Image (cartoon, rainbow, N blue to C red; front, side, top):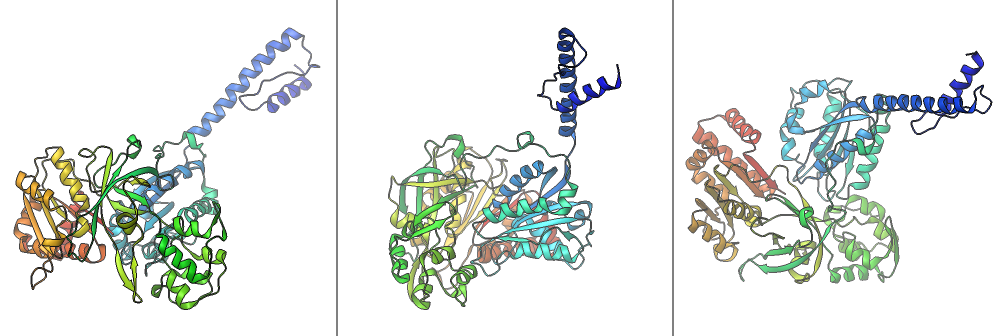
Amino acid sequence: MNDSLIDQLSSVMNASADSSSVVELPEEAPFDAEQRQWLNGLLTGINAIAAAAAKGAMEDAPGTPLTVLYGSQSGNCEVLSKDLKKFAATQGFEAEIIELDDITPADLATISHAVILCSTFGEGEPPDNAKHFYTALMADDAPQLPASLSFSVCGLGDSSYTHFNRAAQDIYSRMVELGATPCLEWVCCDVAFEDDYAAWKEAVFQTEVFASAAGAAASPSATESEPEPKFSKNTPFIATLIDTHNLSGQESAKRVNHIEISLAGGGEDMAYQVGDALGVWPMNCATEVSEILAAGGFTGKELIEQKSGRATLRVLLQTKLDIHTVNAKALATWGIDASPEEYQVIDVLSRLKPTLDAQTFADGLRVLQPRLYSIASSPNKHPGEVHLTVGEVHYELHSKKRKGVASTWFGERLAAGASLGVYVQPSAHFHITQNDSAPVIMIGPGTGIAPFRAFLEEREVRAAGGQNWLFFGDQHEAQDYLYQEEIQAWQESGLLTNLSLAWSRDTAQKVYVQTLIKQRGQEFYEWLQSGAYIYICGDASRMAADVDAAIRDVIGEHGGMDETGVQDYMDKLSAEHRYQRDVY
């Protein structure tokens, strides 16, 4: 075969270099029709085999290792870590997801590429599943990190809190201080985190260090990942309110409502476990919206441009925008030099009286966010339903009565039969043990009783033989004993082995749940020694901190341990998932 013919064949093959191409020799090739047909088939087959082999080599080539670390209290960072893993696969990285507390600062020295997602809650605290890592990283004896560790940090927080995104910022700053190399400045996301997170995610893999290290990129369909939930924060299920009734006494200083919601039609896509939370999309109070419009000199008919399209100002204030929170970004947008901690939106408009056009006013408001509530029912006892325990929020600021958005929406404005958007927020770290013979200690004053009503219903349905001890309390027994009849029935049936009730205003000396933990310290410690699981639900900054301190005191006193021994004991409880908290 002469060189000219070889060149023609090579040219034909190169021009048909994908598996879907059919090879056809040119008419001027020195073959008759039968030979040309036979050679076309042969060369097409060879081309297909070569292309398939090349594609297979690409698919088999591993992506560059990437470590996705997360700390999550309510579950958002955990959800984003899974999204990040899937996206990383399309960028040439093979990601491994690890909770922050499952790694030590020393372990970071073995990693070349890491991305960290961490939320902040309470008074600038890291999530429960990031506390040990955070403490070790901040310690004076934390190990130096190699410059070869390239990382980025994305924080989730709430700008209405003083220590906005502090945990993520601390992790970023400390890792830089210890020698690691950031590929990007850290990113702080507010409650409406989706856009900022998406921009950060794209930017990380476009950095020179990540782009140059990328391996073979997989197609999204080829990556193994969990199926996307049908209903989520941005695609809620439309449920129906069955009933709302008040649990508090007539003379109570509080009003706590029991909420029952039908999930009919949701099927497995709205399945939940005890310990999970329910996300609820609320609507603002129409009266408050009218007050804001009047204070700002707006008619409510002004057309406002939003990313999702146009809508009138009144509709947006009613359904889409946060009409209470004022943060630094809002004041900057409105051109106001003041402290955001001192004001709500109505205060800015009525006291400071800025001259704002409707678009600028709307641009400064945060997006209304769903509320997460601990689920107060077992799906096995109430199939097709979900129950909540919601305390109405009422308070005064600047001599004006204020109220919570979602809590009073349930209690004052949402009638039985009404529709509402909801979704299940799974909890990875707050579920009743599957060991039905294990003892369980539940500590939840006030509305913190919610998940423990669900736990006890679940243990009852499962006929679990393990002992149960409930610590509950509030201000007055006669007015604030939530679910009293159910709790007393469980006590009479023997489901509740121990019931410790703390009423802080019924006696001269205030009694709290942590008071009772110490009073029954010997028995409490014996339960722990017999394998008991501890569950805590409620306020993070005060109650949960005081309860934690009381438990440590009990372990130290009745276990004969010093501070180091107590910490080791608590670490062991956490490692065995026998110390779990649902705090906010």
